[in-house]
Amino acid sequence: MASGGFSDDIGQRERRPLAESNVGSTGCEDVNAGSVGEVTSSRADWARLNHWLVERTEPVVIIAWGELNAIVGGLPDSATKHYPQWWHGDRPNTRAWRRAGYELERVDLGRTVTLRKSAIAWTPPTADHATPHPSAHQARVSSQLQDSGAIDLQAIDPRSALILLPCSGSKAGGGANRSSTPPSFWTPELRRARAGLHAAAHVDERQVMPAWQRYTGGFYQAAGSSLAEAVSDGAHVAILSGGYGVVRADETIGAYDKELWPADWPGGVLEDALIAEAIRIGATDVVAFAAATTGYARIIRRTPWRRAGVRRAVLVTVISTGGGAMVKVPRDLGLAFRAFWYGLPVTYPAGIRLEELT
Image (cartoon, rainbow, N blue to C red; front, side, top):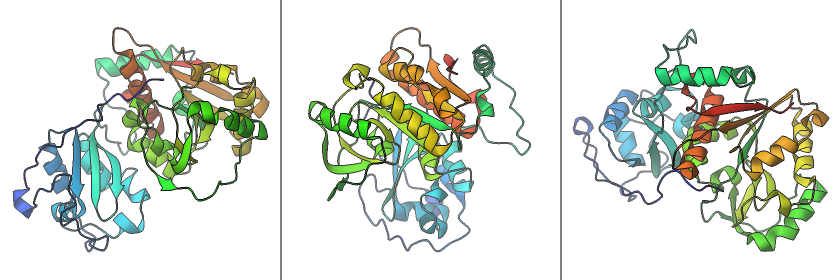
């Protein structure tokens, strides 16, 4: 299982203050961060944040709450009242950092906002949804998608499809203390298989967090805010996991150390769990993202999707040439997920292949 495509050891450079608003630089420290209540303006000037971010060169920017409040001239009430939805989607605040080449990574209300350099350039949506004039790369990707069995991925609604993702080797530590075991909604067979594998997987559930936040590898870093938005919007996202078999993106899980090997799981258990999940949500479409030769892809390919009434099941893979595949493949799959979620086919990375499974 490939681990992160970006270095976790990223130094925070000293930032220059914004002269126009007398904003002080606080780096990573929570200095005068202000309270959640400091959101008094409904006319925040997001162009000022965009101009400030354009001058940044560091890959990660951590902005103290009070500093952000001063930059934009007052955060609106929606920043806290409508958290987390307000921090995602297409709106003036998100466009400000995306136009500067950043994606939202984390919001600690009343404390800090963390932005990370995006791996691809932001493409603004147009009023008439016209496709921008394609670059050579975009034309190449378009040709690749057209050659992939004539599958029209953009015809699939990501908000109603079952979306399957791989887990990652790198994971966030910590989480909330688990005081009791929550009821499981998975099949009894999967629950028994999980219990039998927990010791070998070194599962530690003393602290738990949602699965989509636990994984921090290259796929998840490249997907960025698109995955957070998908979960916030109630998309049906499931993750194939070495320690849990299959988890829903918002399902709380502990830490573990185990790559997904199909042979570790009783025959048919993972496939049956995926079928049950597709039936539960009434999915007619399945879109899965996985490297072509991995255990994730093998499980997805051998799942009898027709049993669940699925009309289209598509496996999104990437062909990588040259070195660095352990980093490049998960990153490009994360970018493909991002392009799928936002409906921007011209932003798919080169090398993407679509494999029809039904």
